[in-house]
Length: 181
Image 1 (spheres, rainbow, N blue to C red):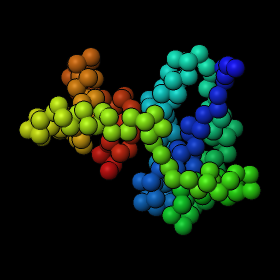
Image 2 (tube, helix red, strand yellow):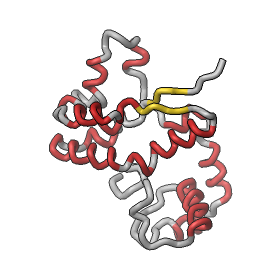
Image 3 (cartoon, rainbow, N blue to C red):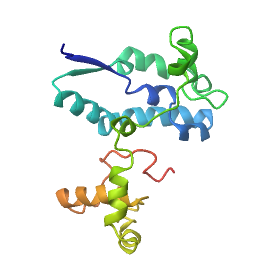
């Protein structure tokens, strides 16, 4: 009747190369990138998991981030994490006989897609932010580039709450938003 604990897959993409952009990196850079994005989880995904679970009176266990799992994952060579252009290759092989095909090889979906609000905020931002305002405001003082009106919409909320900050290095950003892409 009531669920008070859940399992979360957070950390799996970071440890086992589950993001599309990682396919472009050579193995020697991939390992460093995986360490880097894992170290930043506390600024992004783990806050979301903690807040979502707490809002519903549940505890979320992030099993992939158990220290022993993290240690083991970082000892696995990069070429086993992406093979034949397939992300998380080693996980798929490891669970091949335990998971149905539609789960094992399903298309990756972003967190917000499951909530059914995929284009709601984007459409709202597109309708309320003028093209000229977007062009004027999209390059921040620290050099970060805002890629869409939706990002500008969220940044304006942030700026209204915290002011214009010179150093935003502490703020979690996904690779899609940062200068990498």
